[in-house]
Length: 114
Ligand SMILES: [Zn+2]
Image (cartoon, rainbow, N blue to C red; front, side):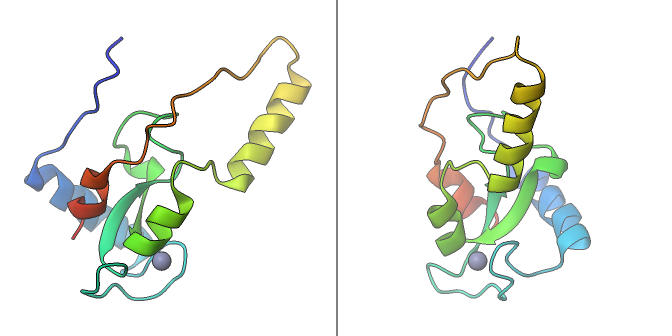
């Protein structure tokens, strides 16, 4: 399996942005502030479950976030997902977590939705 990152065309990014805005509105998913032109308040795509753990561009795993929130989150797994995952592992002792690469922060995402 290839680990190369899949990049989207401008048209694909625009279509994703429209779908996400229909679902979540036109504010940052995390801080709920409006997007602005400033470098930390620009709109960006964020993989809710980090790209290094769930490779793909499905709308179900994407949110629009301001650059500041996106950088602050980085490759962290949202705590709600982490709790569900740990509960699953606890209930299924044969299943275990594996190491994942930490190279999931890609500047292309930060520029993609602007
Ligand atoms: Zn934000």
